[in-house]
Amino acid sequence: MDLERQKHAPLYKAIESFRRQRVVPFDVPGHKRGRGNKELVDFLGIKCVEVDVNSMKALDNLCHPVSVIKEAEELAADAFGAKHAFMMVGGTTSAVQSMVLTACKRGDKIIMPRNVHKSAINALILCGAVPVYIDPKVDTKLGIPLGMELQDVRAAISANPDARAIMINNPSYYGICSDLRSIVDLAHKNGMLALVDEAHGTHLYFGEGLPLNAMAAGADMAAISMHKSGGSLTQSSILLTGEGINEGYVSNIINLTQTTSASYLLLGSLDISRRNLALKGRESFAKVCDMAAYAREEINEIDGYYAFGSELINGSSVYDFDVTKLVINTRGIGLTGIEVYDLLREEYDIQMEFGDLSNVLAYVSIGDRIQEIERLAGALNDIARLYSREKGNFFCAEYVTPIVKATPQEAFYASKERLPLDQTIGRICGESVMCYPPGIPILAPGEIITQDILDYIKTAKEKGCSMQGPESEDITELLVLK
Image (cartoon, rainbow, N blue to C red; front, side, top):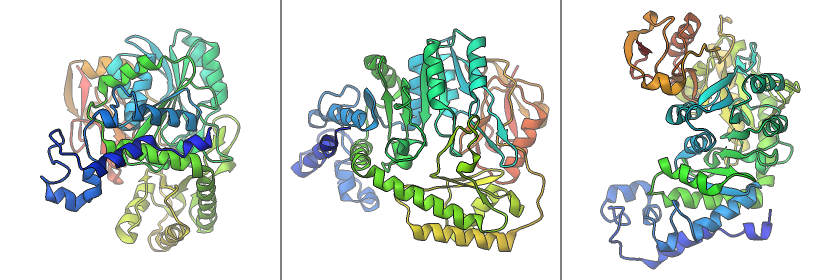
């Protein structure tokens, strides 16, 4: 990485220069730098609406960059150690889907862990690729899915030598990392592309002592959520490509679904945040790691909680662990993670990232301070003292092994009927069901509905998990294939 070059932010500079010129706008957006919508200005501020502008020569065009956006993408590629970087304004969902659509066409096989984000499965609906799922091992005490084991990847490759690609989560929402380099090497030795969903791994490129990142492992493509741990605005992300990937073809794939009216607020935030990470990332993420370590120590002193960390590493299903992920198991106080999540929000004004049936996640990143960590620990101590109850029966995992009977595309577009939940057992599901976050489908189109899956859905609903996916607003019915 060229640190001297990384001091520049060409797109941000161009946007600021344009703002100062006071150009008369006879283009979109129609609010005309806020003059047509005073409430919008009051809400966002004049500086914000003044740079909410349309593509033009001075600011380049994301669909076909030739000047300042192109230079900003080159700087991003240098910062992340990639051959090329694409700025994305459709979130990492758009980046993940672009990876899958680049690698696969209708009928092509792609090997992936079943606990992928819904964006990957939705990409299969779009392109008609055939998933070869690897079921993750499960830590039944913590209630979390683990990483892909090499023996399972080898078995999947052996059974499907014609697969076009392998997708890897790095890390998972829970901080779990698979043996990334070995999986990438296996993919390449068998003529397959290695695609990495690094929605929760931006910091891996800049911090020290953290798990291996996709580009360093030799992956072909990686989807990076800059807005998560990288500090940019929500919905802004980056798609990285390695050697041997035709960036012109990837650009065409991206332009199939990405807007032609890219937000310069998002693009500018990517340019600023890339510069910030390149110049200050090592120092910033050292502080993040220290805060997360301090939080673990404080929380693990409270009876009933377990904030797990690197002690989970076993060289296989937990090859490495992202210590910035502060996941707190709540089973010991007799409450589900979502119950603790709700108490923290409603009684203590603390907003956690998510709660599931066994854990609650605090997303610790560059904007946090030690006093917020202490406030969280204090609130958790209060909850344990005031709300603990006898340990009940918990689901053993945040993952139920599916039985796949049709591809996601076949099931999504098939003739379907709507039935009450209890009448769907044994039928093929025609839609997705998930708790969001984390957005890992409990059911995906093409999978058999079982009693275990229905029990999981009902328990998640009863405990207050945010459910989405089905057409049924209250998740009382499911679409099944006729």
